[in-house]
Length: 74
Image 1 (cartoon, rainbow, N blue to C red):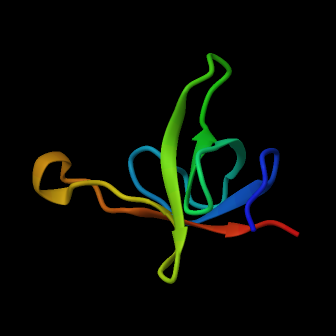
Image 2: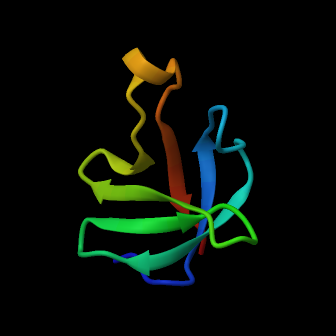
């Protein structure tokens, strides 16, 4: 279960998330969706945790950016 304050390591990055970097979980929306904080100015992206893993989905057709995937840091 993801909790606010958990640390996530980016295991597959893109233009917005750097592979190998650590990000902090922000607000929990529900048992599937939550925020990943990306900046000091309360910036965040919405992330998902499901059977595919933990990821931020991007629309490749519109943005030409692949999805970013994360692992929960122990």
